[in-house]
Each structure stands twice: as structure tokens, then as C-alpha cells.
Length: 111
Image 1 (tube, rainbow, N blue to C red):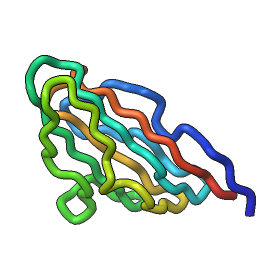
Image 2 (spheres, rainbow, N blue to C red):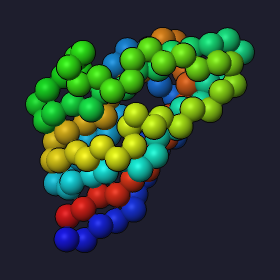
Image 3 (spheres, rainbow, N blue to C red):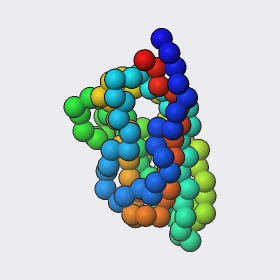
């Protein structure tokens, strides 16, 4: 099995409704780091899910729920670190306000 360090989610600003941010495609992937930075002058919340192939975001696959980030805060999401995803699984997430929280994730993909 070959493993490759990779950027799972390139830096992007979260939307204010759930969106797929990464899909494990023909790989087994592990999340090693996910950071979220609140770029605004007021607090915002973030929510993330790890969703099975063909599934949708729901309470049963929610990993982070409405975590508040203070103005200017950079949060390393320990709840996400170490989770493995198999083919077709996704990372889905959003913030309470669009374009105010930047997210980035890295990890490994194994083939």
C-alpha cells in the first residue's frame, strides 16, 4: 500500500449551508489536520460531518456541531484528526455565515 501526504481541502471560505469539501476517490484517506480561521470581527460557528458514500449530512455523522470561533480565532479541529475515510466518503461542512471562516485540511491518501 502506497501512502501519499496530500492537501485534502485547499484553503477555502465556508458557505452558510452544508457543502462537500472533500471526497475520498479510489483511496483510503486519513485526516491529519483541519484548521478553521474566523476572518471576521464577530464570532461565527462551524459544523462538520464525515459522511458515508452515498449518504447525506445528518446528526448521526456530525463530528463538530456549531463550534463557536471568536473573532480572529484559528481553531485546529481535534475532533476530526485521525478519522479514516474509505472510497466515496466525504467531509462536509459549513459556517453560520458565508465567506467569513476559512478552512484547510491535510492528511494522507493510501492506494
